[in-house]
Image (tube, rainbow, N blue to C red; front, side):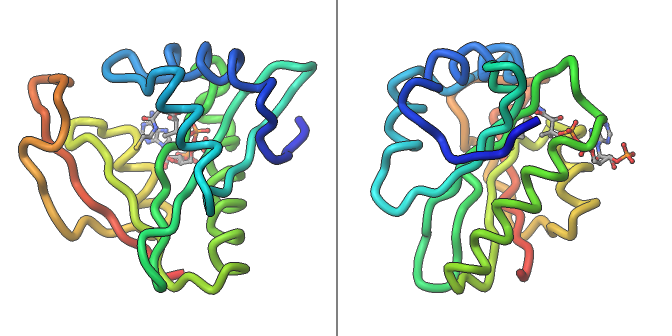
Length: 149
Ligand SMILES: CC(C)(COP(=O)(O)OP(=O)(O)OC[C@H]1O[C@@H](n2cnc3c(N)ncnc32)[C@H](O)[C@@H]1OP(=O)(O)O)[C@@H](O)C(=O)NCCC(=O)NCCS
C-alpha cells in the first residue's frame, strides 16, 4: 500500500470507492472534485496496484480547527487497520499546520464510524437532528465530534 497525495487522475477510482463505502448519500463526483481541489484542502490516498483503497480529505475550519471532510476505506479491507493509518496521517498533517482540534460530522446511526472515532479519541459535542438530506438507518441526524490534537 502506498500513501500519497491526491492527483486529478485518481478521481474515477475515488468515485467508485465512495459509492461502495457509502451506501447512502455518497459524495458525487463534482463534490469530491471540489473538496479535493479546494484551496487549503489536504488529503491522503492509499493506493494498491493502481487502485485507490482508501482516502481522507480535510479542510481548515478556522485558525484552530480543521474538519475531516471524509474518510473511507474499501469495504473489502474494513477492520484491517487502514482507516486508523489514514486518520493518523490526516491528524499529523493538521498538527504540522498548527491546528489544535480535529472536527468531523458523522451520521448518528453510523455506529461503525462512531466507534472508530471514539476509539481514536473523538468526543461527540453536538447532535444535529436534520443535518443530512438522505435518511440512513431511519435518521437524517449527525453528531459533530472533536478531538484535541
Ligand atoms: C470508518 C472506517 C473508515 C474505518 O476504517 P477501517 O479500516 O475499517 O478501521 P480500522 O480497521 O482501522 O478500525 C479501528 C477500530 O475502529 C473500530 N471499528 C472499525 N470498524 C468497526 C465496525 N464495523 N464496528 C465496530 N467498530 C469498528 C474498532 O474499534 C476498530 O478496532 P478493532 O478492529 O481492533 O476492534 C470504515 O469503516 C469505512 O470506510 N466506513 C464507510 C465510510 C464511513 O462511514 N466513513 C466515515 C464517515 S464520517
